[in-house]
Amino acid sequence: MISEKIVKALSQQIMEEEHASRIYLAMASWCDANAYPGAAKFLYSHTNEEREHAEKILKYINYRGGHARLLPLPEVDNDFKDVRDVFEKAMEHEIYITKCINDLYELAIAEKDYGTQVFLQWYIEEQEEEEDLFQSILDHYNNCKGKLALFDKFVSEKK
Ligand code: FEO
Image (spheres, rainbow, N blue to C red):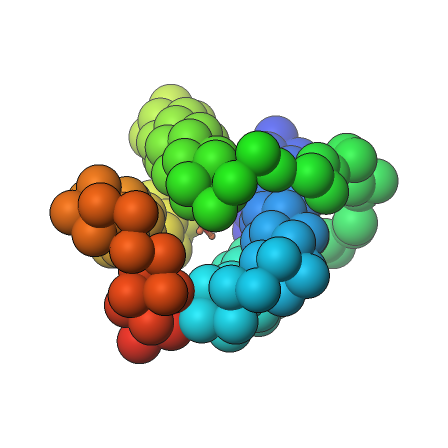
């Protein structure tokens, strides 16, 4: 049986993942509206990934005998300076999510919840991949020296 303290912390993370999903949806919409179809395609797809991350935690709470409840979502930004701003903000957000996951892991250790520690290991690896993914996009932006159509094509091929 999962403790109420862990349920509360994991429920907060469901909200964070849903919020990330909406952040990427707003970013996808901006890219779509500003003629970056490749970046929009990538971000629409990433929106779905974040929703899956949220659902996976929700199902885990219920599997462990808790009841996952949804929390209100914060507002999202809809406007960006340019496509670089989109991906810099995405990277910043992934770094924030990594911190959230690490804090959750520390709590699971403090609470001696070994099952939740094992569950969170998937998210720890996922965050390494996500940070690497967004860093590679930013690196490519810097390398393509203003050739934004090339940049957009590169991002469209990312998963
Ligand atoms: Fe679910 Fe991109 O972190």
